[in-house]
Length: 232
Image (cartoon, rainbow, N blue to C red):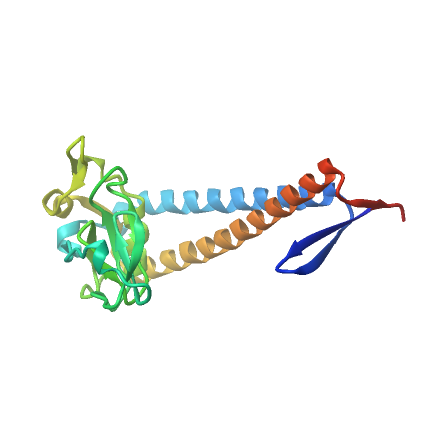
């Protein structure tokens, strides 16, 4: 059987010719297997980073590596309909007509239930005081992208205070110790591998979402009898 499914979108008819529902299922399964494999590879690489030989590592406090600070917070009333992205406790929260950071930064949520979560901003953005900036732009011995990945793998729970309103302040964060490769070229190589794998995973996630939407649409029209089944 060949299934012809007509979708009405923006007053246009789109026809998808799919040999069978099992084909979509098989493609989806292969994508999920590849996705799980890549996630496993990243976990292995990250574990190797943590377990590097001691002679190739250095141990430093975050306060000695990065400039740690909370920028000025702006109110939502100041947000604009267009402009630069504003980063708060949970990522992008709006837009503003000015930016306070020219370069992208690694930031750590320092307010609320997601306290301790690490995010990566884009260039030219406004970062509010609900996030702690971990700025290594002036540190020539650290690969910036590697430093971001290093932060992502840390557990900052011991740096968080307060139960009703959790918060992360600078003092304990500055004393937090991390272990990482001494050589910057090794940091850069690790960052490139992790970045490439992240890009591949993002692409797979987009494909998986597309297949899930196709499957959902097919199931809807199949179960409601809104399709034509034509024998070849």
